[in-house]
Image (cartoon, rainbow, N blue to C red):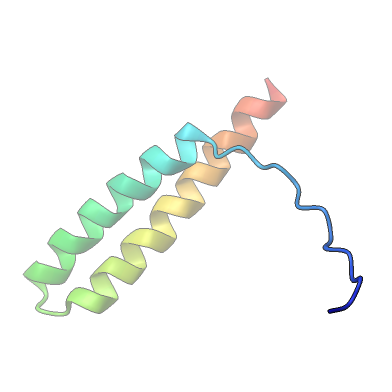
Length: 64
């Protein structure tokens, strides 16, 4: 039993734009994975593209 204090966790709210584009990316990646018969690669690419687009749009909205 030690008296170690836990580091305070920052409260981050998720951005709905990023989540929306992540879902779209997963859907597109899944369909591409089925078409090219390589589902893990398709889903991985979809997640990556969805996050990149979502974060880019999120940053654009913050500047406005």
